[in-house]
View 1: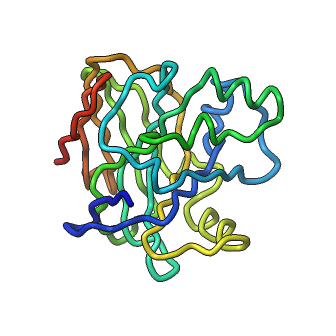
View 2: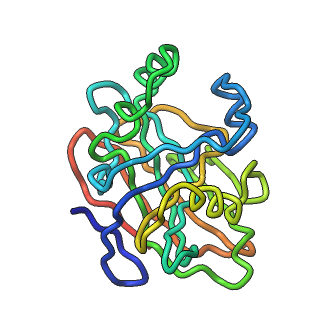
Length: 212
């Protein structure tokens, strides 16, 4: 089973629960409809990777996200995450009304920085993603259609969240394809201060990330 680092220790998440279409601008950029209720899908533990690949059978797209870990029924830690997507395949599946798992749950489809404890007043969090030094994504919990407390309550209403489970809270606008050699830097902020960051270099071969 794959693990992530949480405040210096290894934790094995049982599952990754993902929230889709949680930023209005991202819904618009992909030409999707505004959902009537929260969109939820899953990634298995096997989707956790440590290398940013630019292709997996087809080109991959990046989606930077604020990611929260569950412990004792509450969110306890935060990380920057990348939801990697086979966009062309996802579009074909959506057009047929079929599930997205083939495009979202493949091996290596979820990358995470270290998880760090949530600070006081953490409900206002921000994320930043730069590629080759250029800002491509910026988002905050304030821009979410469903805020973290609502996300936790909604998921818990129909699914048991176990200690170590990860919730990926959705991506803001600015998603796009991953190209080999690009340097990705993802950051999580609270009160304007950086909590954690992670750097990946996109490759066709496996390479470890560098966490700061």
